[in-house]
Image (cartoon, rainbow, N blue to C red; front, side):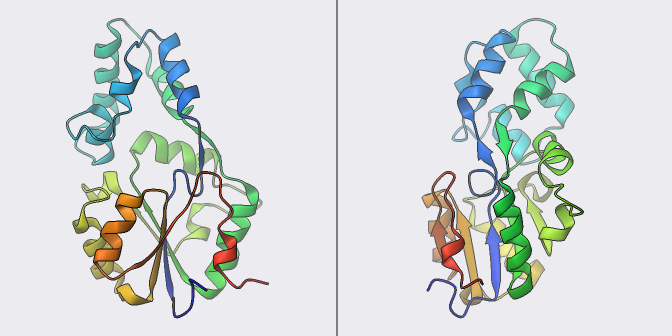
Length: 207
């Protein structure tokens, strides 16, 4: 079992907890008049609006202004945010229940490449469940836009190891990117690459 000897969990957000719909996001931006949506959503382009925002190098206002410039006409903040947040679908309640169960046995951390607009929407709309809020699921959240660094850079993992005071060999990282998992492995962290929408609860011996 993957979780043998594991005390700490580092869990990704998008694709692991949150179901994503890239095509819906593309269609919403196209309706606003943005033709080259792929350029906006390119995670490989470190100088693009997405990664600049995910590393906290630009503010939400600067991101929106950048989108307006790409569209070439006046579009409201509300319209841009709605299109941007349409990427995020839901967090299945069984995964929220799973997080609560995992907290009983492990120290659970969130590690996400995300941005302020998505994070605020997620905290307001996706994490609230019964009486629970985001702070109930995690010991601490590590967010790229706050840390000014992003996966798969080794620096973000090293910063978390130091800040949380965790042992890599006692830590399991669950992410949907093989590249991110490879970096974690190189630092001695156990990893599991999750598929979109996968139920990864069998990794753990939970009753």
